[in-house]
Image: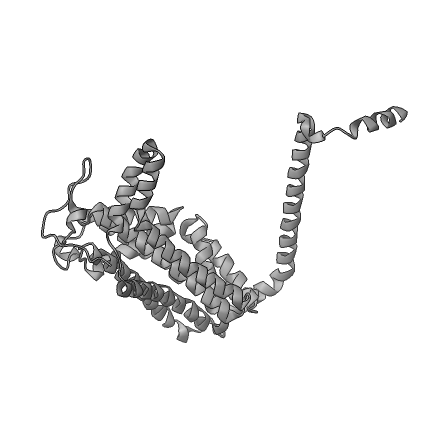
Length: 384
């Protein structure tokens, strides 16, 4: 014992972190602490689930017991609302395609929307896969590469900004968060979106800036910048932009109708005040998680949000599952069938086009190593 006492003063001025062994012990200690906190959190979740499970199961069973055969025709109404949602998304794509001189029939665009949603619901990282599939289909339908990429990216951008705006509106109506914080978030969303679009249309200045700094860096980024500049040639004016955001809002809100009808089918009161918040939060969570169709994330976040609104856990779970039967499993089945139909029998040209495609000369000029572009009348894109 005396030996240890004589040794301790010598260690007082020593930085233990400088020793490899001491650093390893400190790192092991931090990892152990993190694992302990994670274990405690998991135990807390399990205990909470066990405590609430009996009442949740009773609410879940009673929710489906209240479903009456007389309400089953509402399933057709919900399916029709989901179809209207796809029509709005097809209108959004048609609007952007027309800016590039491509006039596709609305029917073929609805089929494309269903097929891409089916891929998103069936495959991991489905958003990337479905976007690539849409791009290839536009290319097969004679759309130039910049126009095809513009439609895919612009549709995703407008849809993302719209669902975030709906999330803020839902939070405001549900009373979640301080009003000032929500308004500041809305301003950040609007200003950030405007700055992003402005930056995309001014990439030539970025190329000039990089050229002044490093010629090698300019060579590395020049090709990508020039391609994005071609994509940015499809400019959207204020009126068309407002209509595009209206189509995106119609796409989301028609899907909200399916959630409302899920409550009605189960004979439950519709939580109008917080319904938009619960829906928007579930869609944002589903878009972040790289699982097929946000499987699990959409249901979990929707149930959690509805539980915060005071909906019993079992009833919230029943409504979320019924909603997903319509909007996930139904769309996966129909969309998968459409993907097979496109692969087995490609549509004829008269089924695709309202009129022959016209492309801006700046987009139709073939580059070295690029795919040949279709010949035909050429018009300039509207500029703003």
